[in-house]
Length: 84
Image 1: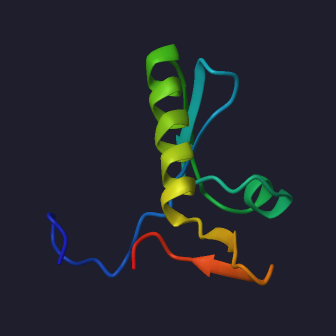
Image 2 (image 1 turned 180 degrees about the vertical axis):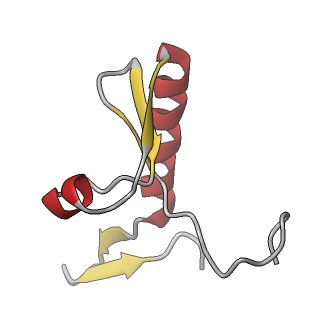
């Protein structure tokens, strides 16, 4: 149950920085259907500080989610989960 109750809905936000100083945050999907039919929205924020924070968090989240590859002594690839 969320802070404001349970509406059965969820937020699927898109958040990204464009050029190291511009940020987009919103529900808008960048496709023709969303442009023409859906009632989606988004905000463009000019903030170098926020853009750098988003970039840093994105890079960290990709690192955290990624598996590592290592070769064993026989040259075979082993997939390593850093969280195991």
